[in-house]
Amino acid sequence: MGIEAYVGGGWLLTKAEQLINWGRSRSPWPLPYGTACCGIEMMCALAASYDMARFGAERPSFSPRQADVLIEAGTITKKMVPVLRTIYDQMAEPKWVFAMGACACSGGVFRTYSTHQGIDDIIPVDVYIPGCPPRPEGLLYALLKLMDKIKGDHPLRKKVVEALGASHGS
Amino acid sequence: MDLKERVERCLGSDALSVTEYRGDITVEVPRRRIITVLKKLKEAADLEFDFLTDLFGVDNLDLYKKKKKKKGDEEEAEKGAQEPQPPRFEVNYLLQSLKSNERLRVKIQVPEDDLEVESATVLWKAADWPERECFDMFGIRFKGHYNLKRLLMWDEFPDHPLRKDYPLEGKGEERHFPVCEF
Ligand code: SF4
Image (cartoon, rainbow over all chains, first blue to last red; front, side, top):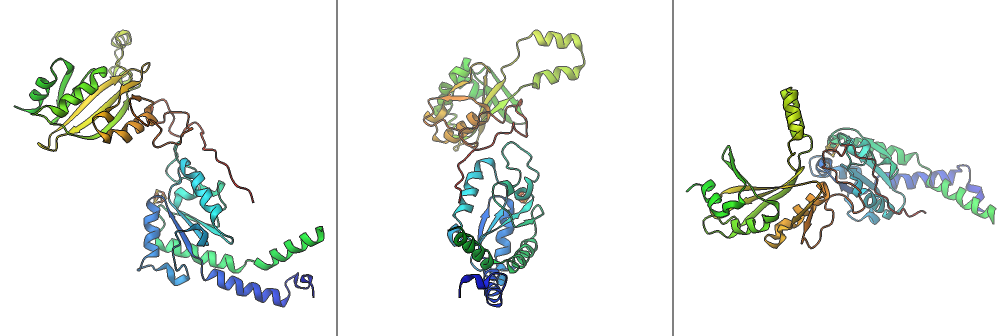
């Protein structure tokens, strides 16, 4: 039986995707990237009283290679832009990004020569969290939103389509 | 003897003016004598300003013009325009004596067409980063500094952002960097 049999969302593919999404959505290990005041609020969300670990964001990963979610909390200066991009590039797929706070979303109050006006033209952003700073609940809500997003994902179907495309081509 | 008198006695003719404002003493000295003056202040037995708290630049562009406009006296303004303007930039040194806990501000004026000042790193290692910041933000060069690179902006940045004629939003400079494509 060739792989073609699975295309189009057959029972096996759907169930396997559900299993993968279940696993991914319940273990979004964050990479804390706190560059300004929002970082403090992020630490608070990770610490005991808000306890982000409840949602599977169990272990803040300080190595981009072992992280799933980049929490960009704070102002990005223009000098910092290549660093942020490098860190994003170093993360293994699948990866997601939170833009936490007004600064990360749009530059916030800092319409100045040194501040990058929103990180979404450097890296793709999955969830924007408004606020200056957002409360820890905001970050938890974003995490729940991300879990929903992951649940609607089709990790295998993409792979199959890619594989088919490749085999058709050859 | 109070601090003002001691400073005056120590510096002699190098002190162009010594002013006191709310208990803070500012002494203005000639630009080319700055290292000699700082050395004197550091080593004089009755002063011993052995600690450099900070060093920073000031841009006085338009400061004097505005003052004259406020008066609304046109004759005065015209007279003012003929008067030689004070040099555009200043560098301030904030000194402290750890022994007597006294503080002193030393000020030099730097004209726009000759932005060079002797580096204070020969006296205090602490002058390293403040001088780099001052260079970065105002373009004042410190002669004798061993590593005068930009401190806050990236190396290729073309301007000096704390100058008054530089717009707050910048001139659209972006840092360029290679992106790896997958
Ligand atoms: S959004 Fe507000 S709290 Fe967050 S980094 Fe910017 S200024 Fe700080």
